[in-house]
Amino acid sequence: MKNIFISGGAGYIGTHCVISLIKSGYSPIILDNFSSSHKSVIKKLQIISGKRVKFYNVDLRDKKKLRSIFKKHSCEIVIHCAGFKSVEKSIEKPISYFDNNIGSTLSLLECMKDQKIFKIIFSSSATVYNDSQPLPLKENSKIGKTQNPYGNTKYIIERILMDLAKNDSRWSISIARYFNPISSHESGLLKENSNGVPNNLIPYIIKVAQKKLPYLKVFGKNYKTKDGTCIRDYIHVTDLADGHLALLKNNKLKKGLNIYNFGTGKGSSVLEVIKAFEKQNKISIPYKYTKRRPGDVAVSYCDPKKAFKELNWKANFNLQNSLIDILK
Ligand SMILES: NC(=O)c1ccc[n+]([C@@H]2O[C@H](COP(=O)([O-])OP(=O)(O)OC[C@H]3O[C@@H](n4cnc5c(N)ncnc54)[C@H](O)[C@@H]3O)[C@@H](O)[C@H]2O)c1
Image 1: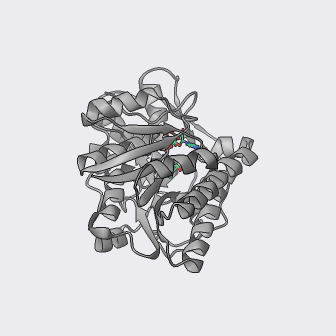
Image 2 (image 1 turned 45 degrees about the horizontal axis):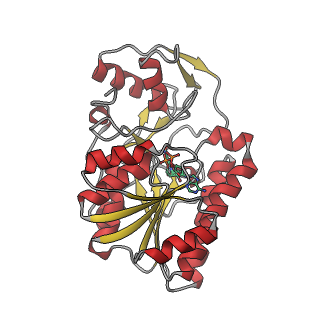
């Protein structure tokens, strides 16, 4: 069984990757400080997979501890999902975001290099794309001019990885640009963790459906889109997790730098998502329009053809069937 380190493996996307990895015969080792997740998730992973799941409670910035963990296991690859991800909190606490996201990536890369681990898959985001780019967004569309500290951390990390690949030929670096992950494992045990008012649309709708929040705020109604609300490319998190597997399988982690969009290629507006959710769950979602959120682009969806052509990966779920069992 092949060991794979997965930073942030206790988080929303990380846990789904862990399940996909185990299903495909890999042995994931979670590195997480549980700053935005809960230890109880490890037990849930064990229930779903029927396997013991190895984990270390470690802050990636703690190089001493990270080095000692790396020494204990033979492993060639790291999937790097760890990081803070809230746009709003990044505006409140930019230094903490730079320190955590960039600091932990630098620390991780240094410890990997010392241990001669040169293969990494990095969780990037559609937010790195420059918002004046023609649609659909392709891997070679322009990046930069990111709108908030969170997006800047992703952009800066991408630049660091690009320089690293260019200047040190030992590295195989894959950048996975996630579009908008939604939904969760069919068991209903794994969830996107969000205390208070969620930033992401689906967790927000779920809280309204569960009557934990009175209504959904729709940020802006006069964007230049078919119904005035923002359009995003929603991808089922299991499809996303399988994208990482496609990179691992058949040695697709090529030398140098490779970038892939992980999305469906289809955009849906906020109102379309609300309607699809209402239809699927036979429940009404009250909503109110409020002002635009700073930094939100009107439309974002990708061209996922490169991942299909090179990795033989594509999303299987569409929006409607991503919403099945969502209230489980
Ligand atoms: N969920 C999304 O909508 C989305 C979209 C695009 C990109 N991403 C990126 O994907 C990655 C995973 O996202 P997620 O939704 O699973 O987030 P998440 O918050 O659920 O998981 C992140 C995990 O990283 C851990 N972590 C944070 N800082 C750490 C540190 N210094 N050391 C060790 N562990 C640390 C947290 O405890 C958490 O378990 C993030 O990098 C995020 O920016 C997420």
